[in-house]
Length: 138
Image (cartoon, rainbow, N blue to C red; front, side, top):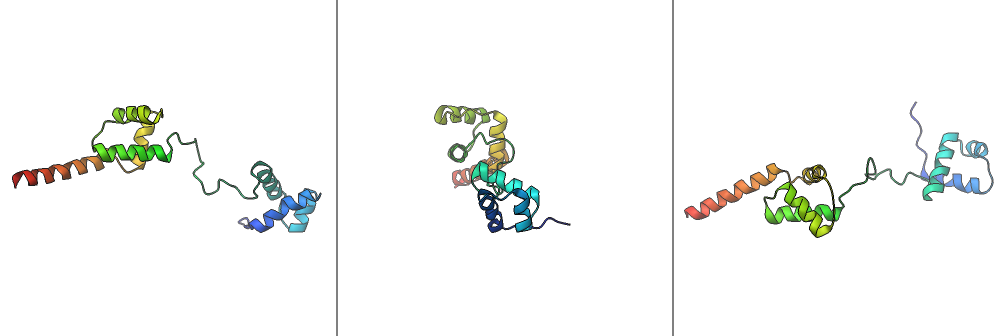
């Protein structure tokens, strides 16, 4: 049997009742909920001041990101500007201009996440060479 969903309004009553002096067992009986839910809500409330998981819809799984959105925008801007750049050159630019130290593998993954892989750049370079060739021939 799937666990039933409990509304945030009902969860908000748990810390209020606990603050008024009700014991966990009494809160469970009054609200018709399980003891584990009461303990989980009280823990979230004491840690974050909210009754639901504040990280439920965020990307807070795993390690914190070493490159911020601003860093990613900077990388994207360099690639857009220079079209063809080596990974270690991009890594140097990131260090000298933004004082961000990261690994080459992180930088490579970031470029892939931004859909700026070498294949995309190769296609752009090919298209430019075709345009240049057409202009030169005319």
